[in-house]
Image (cartoon, rainbow, N blue to C red; front, top):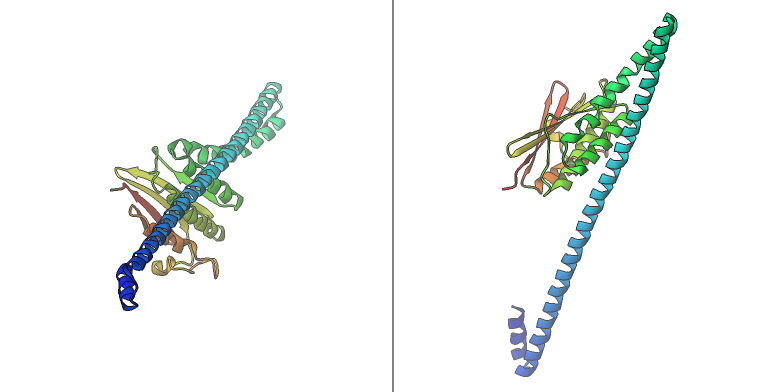
Length: 271
């Protein structure tokens, strides 16, 4: 169309064919240079995006390793204290000191919740998660919930391996859902969040459940700006909807039953 316009204007202005040809050649060169610049821009953008994704994955892996080291140190400290208490109990039992024996026994009982917490925490479930970034996310949220006074329970009964095609998107979605659940649990009396991973043939389900006292309208729940934590806080779930809308194998199901909010992220196999 542009060439036809140039020829038409040239005929009207009585420009010679040689000049018209020169104009067309220059125009073609400009178009070619523009396309070349666009291709370079797209290639540079793709490289930069890949570098950013790799940086995020490396950062999550680093955080995961740091958190693993912290929990391993906590476990070693507990084992050390536990052994010392047992040795003291043995010495008091040999001497027949019932009063000291009872005191140390009560101290040993006080250590049992720590043992249960360590054994029932993320460490016991780590082997089931085969994606390193997901492991890092799980540990980060577990420690964040613990710091906020919230119990975050993970349920997995078999190895879980998420597809790597859109793993970063899945991590972002799970992170938002867990953050929202933890923030809400802080306001509730039970202060409990449950996260279950279930894998079946061609489908992975990640269910996050927590108590809610104020949410009644599921339709408004995912709207931009809606939040039970105050004005200007309800962008997370809207972001989740946007992320899912861009993927063909991700689906989110939201249910509210007896003051329990249950959100299930379903990941299907790519077709």
